[in-house]
Length: 418
Length: 152
Image (cartoon, rainbow over all chains, first blue to last red; front, side, top):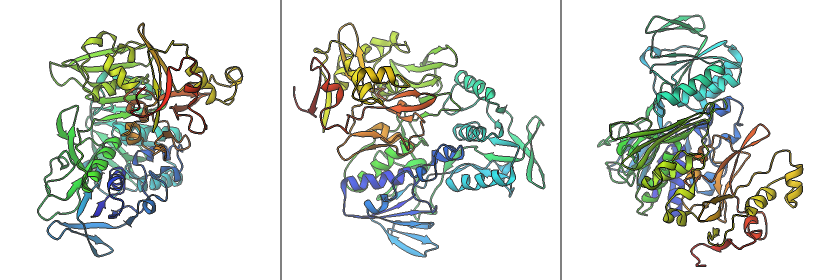
């Protein structure tokens, strides 16, 4: 069997590892538009903050490709995929590579709101390593005083954190009504907001940028919907990510918000698999098919794709969205649903002392979501119960108690753990 | 691979598993007294004594076959060594704590080492020739070191 993998991030690397668990001989070719050795995308903010060195951004050791006998084409772009001839075309190398199994792990690409489309010297993306290498250079050369970050989601706030740690003045513009809208409820977000304001970050909510004031340096001001003008001398875009589809596939892959995959990570075309941020698989907590763009999901999907590509039937039960994001000393962990989506959901929450907020979202005696701010030490245990779809009725009254632990769980659960 | 198994019927909740685990991972691995009296920070155990009115037992990282913490680690710092032991490379860890929420049993712990956050988990004392320290010092043989699937 021979394999071609497009991509070089988490899902692609997990694909290699999945294949090699089953097939030590087959030829693996890995193609990436980026020229770097595989690195971890979530580490870009840590790199900017000086918390991780360039070498330690590598997601796998330097000998990873050699050890797994992977032939790489880095800095190459796939320009077409032909499922009839089972080939992909590469540029600028100008070669056709044939595959028996293909994995599309092209990840995501940052959303650029229409108002920011244009060439501005001081406008930066905040998505991949090249973005932060450029940004790092600009910060040193241009010495900006006020940095505006577009988007108060996960990426935007990690970017804000790194800028604060570099002693920059930071303004976050969030089009929605509160921070971390995709993973957080209002109450939790309010705590995060309070903490970040204390750290000197300025915020604007519910008012998208509708126009730019430009000058010699590029963007010099942002005009918000209510005509507020926010002066800045650098702008970082963190307005979200969408699936980065590969170029035209003859015959067409079925897509929705990502490439549709079955529980084996196979796309609508046999022999072609997809995993990671480009794929749309099953979200086990929302119980619908939707993209869940997180690293652990990309790893799981990539590995399952690899196993199935190499002939071992392995079914995915879906993935769960979960995150842990410390922000300037405040711990935040979330999993599954972040808001009650209907009448049959019951929230259970606890606040204080200090900046502590813990909430579980319950439905039909199961935990469907959790939001922990401040104290996340037991978050894993609750997430474990979510994964197992455990019936919590016999210990419901102990949930979120300070001594919650194995002792409250049913005998069979305890036996399994010990 | 061999795992530590707790026999909750034998455990008397003496807590020595935690004491010796904390000691062996401290600056003074050979002396409980020194570890607790001289260490700049109080030594922290990676094994947790769980106890209720009916039972107790020491529990630590299960070194899961399909380890959620490895899948979730954003740096690649969480890895499995050749013997199957799940280990955390502290050099590469950025303390994002994703492993804390990834572990379905809540067995990875954040600890404050004099202002520096570190993530701690059981390493099965892999650098020692003998059995893990919690097993060695369990006075009641309530923690045993056995091949997986082996009956007691």
